[in-house]
Length: 317
Image (cartoon, rainbow, N blue to C red; front, side):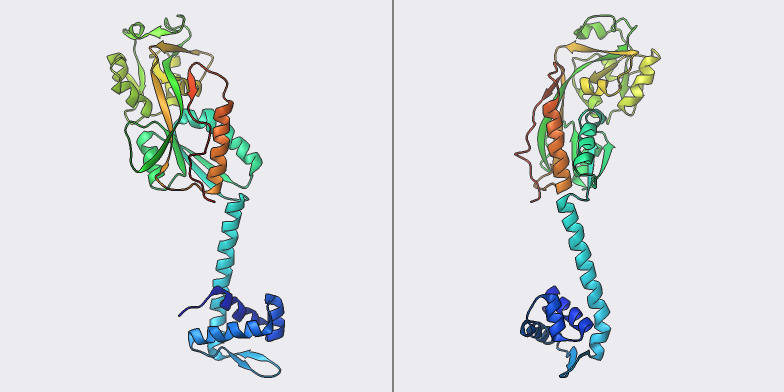
């Protein structure tokens, strides 16, 4: 059975109008064209749907019971097509982004503010997540894209490096290291107490993997789940923290100071999407603004931008 929505619409309009001439006018077709569509529909369902006379067109019993079903199908189709058009036109839509807290704060937040002005109907959700949680969220389709650290190649992902930032020390201004000029040497940290992040955090994974960092940094005396929780512990003199520059800036306070390190040890943040999957228009719009925000970042010895073009990305037409 091959029934088209065009035939269903012809059936519904003819049932409502009770006249081939009036129904054809509403559908913007000729009466013979409408007659042919109804005949094809009746042949497809192997039922007579209308009793015709010279003065009127009446539904048969079977057709009367089928009419509300056909009306509901057309309403659902019209609603679905309307929703699709709204998403494509960016009048509505939603974007979910997951990843590093520092990037969401430093780059994504101003990008979202600009998106809200350009496309006020688009809803955005930013989810802070450690590396593995961000990766899983993207692969499971819970997030449109992620910006996070990666510690190994993943064939399930399309990956593009966006930005890198240098590691340094975040400490109190009155700490001995806070009073020293940058850059600090790694041996300057040898006797320090450290406040660190949980093992699932991408920043801590980098610290743990780099043997140049002191053992005490890889086994911190105090451990928190995310970057914002470091500040109150450092302020109370419990220790210092090793952080990339953007992460340190995301929790900047007057009582704290960030000192860069020598040698130049960096964190790399990557834009990730499921391999081969296109971005929806709302996500596309946010990515374009995000890349423009990266391009606008002032020259900074601690932060280096790798990508400000979307030419290699996949987007829905």
